[in-house]
Amino acid sequence: AQSVTQPDIHITVSEGASLELRCNYSYGATPYLFWYVQSPGQGLQLLLKYFSGDTLVQGIKGFEAEFKRSQSSFNLRKPSVHWSDAAEYFCAAGSSNTGKLIFGQGTTLQVKP
Amino acid sequence: DTAVSQTPKYLVTQMGNDKSIKCEQNLGHDTMYWYKQDSKKFLKIMFSYNNKELIINETVPNRFSPKSPDKAHLNLHINSLELGDSAVYFCASSPRTGGDSPLHFGNGTRLTVT
Image (tube, rainbow over all chains, first blue to last red):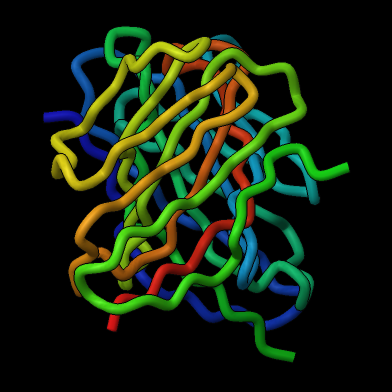
């Protein structure tokens, strides 16, 4: 069955520190991959997406993600975290077969001053 | 201008009641969705419509009935509400169907059934 797994339910980092949020997928073929961010009381906002080509993709707000086929992973990174980055982060995958996105369980990011 | 707007933002009601949530998008997208986010923040697709036509129905109870009067609107009506229906419901839209089409989400409707 198709699935997306975010192993870390909750992560706390200090402001200014680097960040990596993990995402693994299980699909028959390489899916389309996305990262979304959800601030409290808000809907989800697209950070970045990977379809094909360069395995390192840049997104908004200084985020980037790296696709690694051998590890079935699509980890999200940011070199220096700001307090405003505290939010819920969702990895998602989609395929042209199903026409829908499957979301991971989400990772809550807390930023310490 | 809000791209995907849904109303109401909060909905508190008693078991057995019938309620509706409305959604409108002004992005000109062809496809609209309803997602349910449970208390553990897990997001699951419920329905998808493309240009007013139902294309995805994810084994949702018959008490849930989506209606799309036009491609800019997708409403969700829920009959005989149950405690387990308490969740945040998100409307979303995308330019087209297909897993490569990013979603644009509304801000959610928090439904509480007492």
